[in-house]
Amino acid sequence: MTQSAHDTARTPAEAGAEPVSGALAITAPTAIDVDVAIVGAGPAGLSLAAALGDAGLSVQLVERQDRAGLADPAPDGREIALTHRGADMLRRLGIWARFPESEIAPLRQAQVVNGHSAFALRFDPGGSGKSELGYLVSNNVIRKAAFEAALDRPRVSLIDGVAVSEVHTGEAGGTLRLADGRTVTARLVVAADSRFSETRRRMGIGADMLDFGRVVIVCRVAHTAVHDGTAHECFLYGGTLAILPLNGQCVSAVITVPADQAGALMAMPPAEFAALVRDRFGARLGDMTLVGERHAYPLVAVYAHRFTARRFALLGDAAVGMHPVTAHGFNFGLYGVDALTRAIAAARRSGADIGSARVLDAYQSEHRRVTLPTYLGTNALVKLFTDDRAPARLLRGAVLRVADRLAPVKAGITRQLTGVLRAS
Ligand SMILES: Cc1cc2nc3c(=O)[nH]c(=O)nc-3n(C[C@H](O)[C@H](O)[C@H](O)COP(=O)(O)OP(=O)(O)OC[C@H]3O[C@@H](n4cnc5c(N)ncnc54)[C@H](O)[C@@H]3O)c2cc1C
Image (cartoon, rainbow, N blue to C red; front, side, top):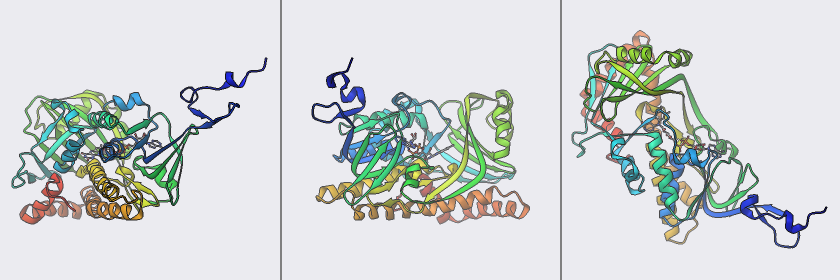
């Protein structure tokens, strides 16, 4: 039996494709046309979608993870330290209001120690007009809230469970081809698809990558003593330990070790691992118990050679992938959202092209100026404070003491940590 054309035709929803008009049931891949197409619905891509939705633009997000994983992401061990500027951005986007109160932990002070020294370089929010340096919120809580906020904007839509496999941009706009054959056309394409961005590579944009040869292991640890909201960065010899205060008698332990030691630490029985954290921290928080899983991340810093190309911009880690020690990765993602949205919204208000070189240049120059000094400074700091040779040990101690005595240096670091005064 021969099937009629009518029998073989499916609705676009069934086929994921749009029927071409006419009697024959030839189908063509669905084409979607929007103002801005964003590759990657991580926290940076979702925040940009929300901001552009508020500016009245139509936005298509494309994400390879499926919707269920985005709507309720599993804990990934990352406790994100947010600066005041980052937190303000999240408030404006309606993301902050979606955080349960119990998930926002104030960061009251920070201190940095070198090796076994009793001296600590201390930072507090004094003089900033704030009562805390910043806040800690789990990455999965941020991702869930950003997902809900972005998709609440009527002009923002999401294609999930499919990767972008090709990208082209031209005079008038850009085109994404998806792995399932669909295409998305837009006036501007933004890639927020992680520090190892495939889209960046496809657009011919290179990046400086600094592989530290180290792995960071993160987990939550409950403890018997009470903490006072202080974050501790301990540059020990042989590895670093950061203790980040969460709500209740719980902290995030962040252990950085040479990559060849990470497997053994990940495989260690939980009680033994908790005892190791307790001992490395000098038992200052009493006995410790591991809560949940450990998560390991290889440490690679990335800085794209350019943040823009014709009708194309990089955002989030795809533009600047930071070493986490100075806690700036997502904050920089948010500052990028702010800079790019301002440039696009200004063009739109004046009836100009939202994907023009002028808009993209404004974004690139601001975002470079804000991020590059901290990127280079963070990498230099990591290099020095992971060098355990005798002269470096002396220099490490001296750097902390000098920073403590030079008020402008200390104030500058505090400003950078809190984001209270814009670096722009
Ligand atoms: C241990 C650790 C601690 C950290 N602590 C802090 C901190 O204290 N403060 C801070 O500000 N930052 C911190 N960060 C950094 C922060 O987590 C990142 O900057 C942030 O998550 C980056 O978000 P993003 O949206 O740019 O990228 P990602 O979160 O990497 O998201 C990229 C998205 O793109 C999708 N994708 C990739 N390729 C494709 C494709 N081809 N097609 C479709 N979709 C694609 C991925 O599935 C993913 O969902 C930390 C990071 C680590 C590892």
